[in-house]
Image 1 (cartoon, rainbow, N blue to C red):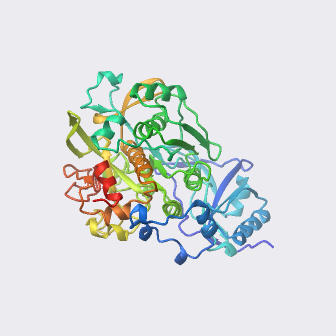
Image 2 (cartoon, rainbow, N blue to C red):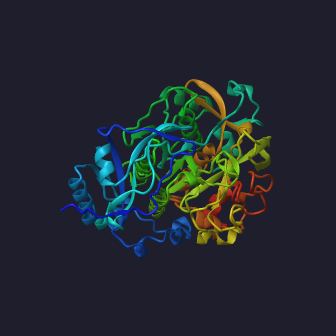
Image 3 (tube, rainbow, N blue to C red):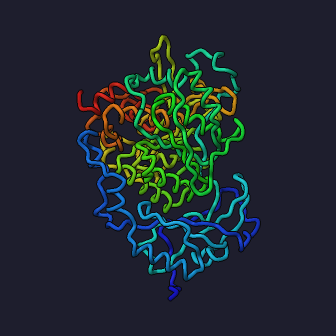
Length: 530
C-alpha cells in the first residue's frame, strides 16, 4: 500500500550554486541514480565510541575488523525491506544494496524520482557550468522517517574541487630546481625524519579521486628517476567513474600528485585509487567503498578534494562524518586536505569558512606550510600564505561541527564570524607552498606542485609506515595527538604567519594545527617508548 504522507529528510534543504540560474527543465525520461543512506541497526547509544577507542596507544586498542563492524553496525534487513517496498510503490529499480555501508542505490527516471521524493528538479547554469539541481528539502514517506538519514544524487552539481596549486609560471624539469625551492617526496620524508627501516609493505593506502587519471608509463618513469621501485597501483571504479587521464591541465595533476607522494614515501604499500563521480553521492560512495573494502583492506585513506562547509547540505555533512566515524572504528586513518584558499576558502562573502571533509571531527585535517631547507635540514617553516591569488592554507573553526572532546584543551579560538565554538581545523600540517613544492610527473611533463592536497598523501604515507613498523593500525590519530601525546615534542610547531583571519601561535592554531611531522619522534611516542 502506498504511503502518501511525506516528511522532509532533516538537513536535506538545498540552494542553487551562487550566481546560477534555472534555465531549463531536465528530460523527464532521463534515468538517474540516488543513494539512500540508512540508520544503523544499533541505536546511536550503542555505536562505538571511536574517540575513547583511539585515545589508547595503537598496541592497546581493539579496533573492529570490517567483518565485526558489518555484523554489529550494518543496516537492518527490515529497514532495507521498507526501502525496497518504497521503490516498488514508485516504480524505481533497486540497483545496489550494501548492508555494511548502510546504503541502497535506487534508479528511475527524473519524473519518477521527482515524484517519489517530492522534489522539483531543474537545469541550472552558472559559474560551475550546467547541472541538475533542486531547491528545498527531499521528502520520504512517514514510514521511513528516522530510517532514511540522507538521499543523495538528485542534484548532480560538481561537489568538490582538488586542492593543488601548480608553481606559476611552470619551471621545467626537476633538474632545473635547487632542493631549496622544490622537493621530491623522498627528500621531504628525510627532512621530516620519516622512519627509514620500513617502506609500507603489507599496507594498503586508498586514494579518493573525483576526476582525472594516471598513466603507468608516467609512474614508471617517475619512480625510476627517484631511484625507488614503482609501487603497485590499481584503480577501482565507483558509480561508473574510471581511470581517465587526459592532459596535465586537468585533474590528472591531482591524481598523479597523490600517487607519487604516497609512493615516494611508502613505495612498498599497495596504492588503490577509487575513482568516483564528482557529486555528493559519488564522493560518499567512494569513501564508504574504500572504508569497507574487504579485498584491498586499506588501513589509510587520503582525500585531497573538498569544498566550503557552506556548499554542503547538513544531511551530507552528517552522512560523510558518519562514514568517517565508521572508518575510525575499523582502525582506518583518514587524511583530508584543508584547502588552498586561506580562511575564506574561496567564498566571497567576507566571512571565514572551513573546508569539508577536513572539518569532520573524525578525520586528520592537513594544513600547509612553506618549508625551506639547507644541507638536509629544515631551516625555516612558516604558514603557507602567498597572498591574494597565490594560495594559502585553509583553516579555521567549523560552523557545523561542535568542538570535539579531544580538542577541548587545544585552546581553539571562537569563530571570527559569530564567536561560537566549533571543531578547529587543521590538526597537523606539512609543506604545501608551490614555491617550495613537490616534484611530480603528469602526462609526460615534469612540474612543481603544491597545495594541501600534497599534505594529505604525505601524512597518509607516513601512517602506512607507522602501521608496518608497529604491526597494527594507528587508526584515528586525533585523540592521541591532542591527548596522551600532547605536550611531547612529536611535531614541529609552526608559529609564524597567518591564513587571513587566523594567526599562527605556539601550540595548536587554525593555520597549521599542532605542526608538521617529526616522523621518528612521533613513532616513538605511538609505540609507547617515550
